Length: 94
Image (tube, rainbow, N blue to C red; front, side, top):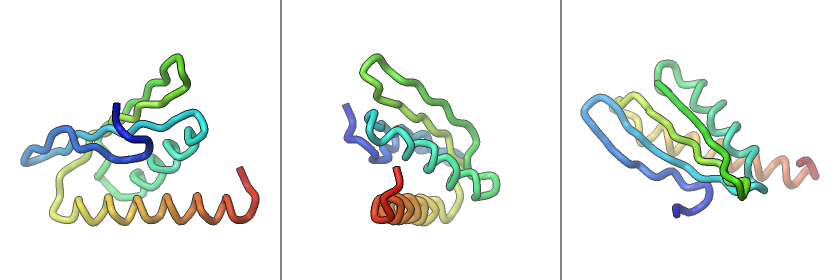
């Protein structure tokens, strides 16, 4: 099983990227935050689905449009999500 919160590229074609992320029960909100940030990039998120298993783990499956800057978009998203979570945790939010 993949590590929690890491983006795993499963396939890469000339036009799209398929990736999966796993989140444990304590990090379930992070899944939604990733989706919100990816939706801010026009035309980048083509399709997504998520499933929760009996242990409460969430599998987020993404299909992204391959563009010249796709790696930078994912890096920026990762940094934005981490920054938001850190600010929230430091302010005592949950």
